Length: 123
Ligand code: HEM
Ligand code: HEM
Image (cartoon, rainbow, N blue to C red; front, side, top):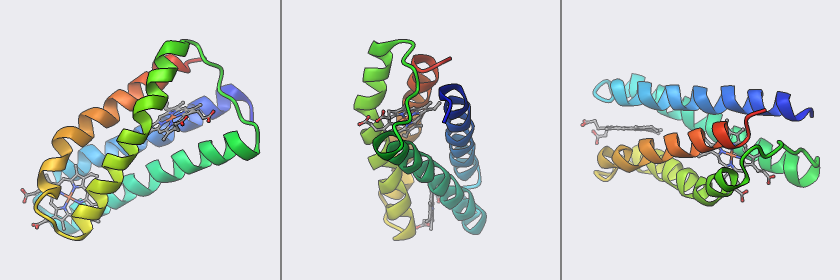
């Protein structure tokens, strides 16, 4: 997989995930619509993460690091963002009251993870 193609593909998928999460927030009072946006974004993001990690481990895929410090930060907080994503989806599916507040931390952390990747890996 050519690094630039991997970068742009990943950027589109993870940004589409973010668009879904923002839409989920905007439609939060219309639960059936809200759930569709939330689940779609979750599936997109998780698929993106799994594909990149499996590609890196088994396929030797590499995206060139433009700014190694920023990339290191991306990789440190990436699992926090992923954990918050899973927590938001699970608490939503279980209708736990915590779900209604998680976006306050989840959305900003996701944006930081995404922006650090966009800047740190840019071709
Ligand atoms: C433009 C968007 C993004 C690009 C180009 C990108 C790229 C990468 C790359 C190249 C790696 C290292 C893989 C490896 O060599 O092992 C990585 C790690 C990772 N990324 Fe991203 N990423 C992006 C956005 C995101 C987002 C939004 C998330 C989720 C919140 C995320 C979650 C992760 C995770 C969990 C890891 C593994 C951390 C580790 O290295 O141990 N990424 N990313
Ligand atoms: C990932 C992005 C998501 C965000 C930012 C988000 C945010 C929210 C917020 C703020 C509310 C509260 C609305 C209110 O005040 O009544 C809510 C409600 C709800 N969300 Fe999510 N959500 C997301 C994903 C999901 C997912 C993936 C599911 C299901 C699998 C889900 C299921 C629900 C349900 C069932 C409610 C109604 C809860 C109740 O009234 O007890 N959400 N969501």
